[in-house]
Image 1 (cartoon, rainbow, N blue to C red):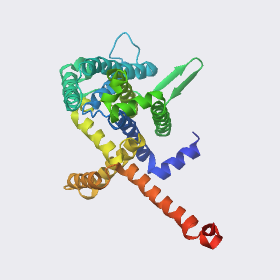
Image 2 (spheres, rainbow, N blue to C red; image 1 turned 45 degrees about the vertical axis):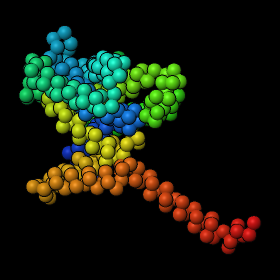
Image 3 (tube, helix red, strand yellow; image 1 turned 90 degrees about the horizontal axis):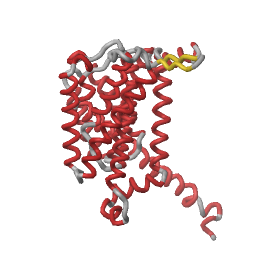
Image 4 (cartoon, rainbow, N blue to C red; image 1 turned 30 degrees about the vertical axis):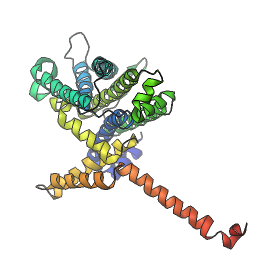
Length: 333
């Protein structure tokens, strides 16, 4: 990106710090899209999705900071692969025993909650690898090296463009999956699992596929977070982040994929603003906002916007073609 274009971004978004903050919101929005894919479309609520996000963050940090002697530092591409594959493998192992053992519904939610506690405890108990309470600092930004060319994403503008492009591609890929024949199985799983089984389809396999895909996306988002923030901590594996990202999806809108992105910007942005103007009461105000959204906009901000847009469109159509119809002879036919 040219210097003039980069300056334009800075002016529009409040300088480099504003651009970095927006980049973090985009990463959390991609993380929320993985939750929406699992919960909104697959019908499986997880309070342990941060375990996969945190594993992706630590996987990238461990590889790129040289904590493994056999791997040279700053191996960005390898860090991305490890941070994406390891959460997917964990999801496959856990999901295999859960889904083929017919552990579903609230029991699945409880197991994922326990997983988040387990992973955060493991990070604290294994300081030589995870850094203990202090985590891992000085994580290098993503640098991709190919024969004859090297791409570095350490700047605010380049990091934002990387995250924006990656998030758009992955969300579009998830949308493509949902519109494929596999997406019909996902809809059938959510609407009527028993009927899907009567048709001879393995619902456990469908659930496992959804779980692995969502976990790999969460791990990749964790890699981006580590590369952009330069620091990872055990809190990234914990229940608080898992709960927060569920709130992102609920506020933004389930079954939209982009709703998680909208929710992350609104929740984090409004929380940041309220923290400055109402330091003692901002959490109370945020809680009130969540209650209002749940009560009056069950489909979230994106769903409410789509509904209002549809209502407005119908009114415009009626005004153009029905109320004015007799004046133009339409009503005389």
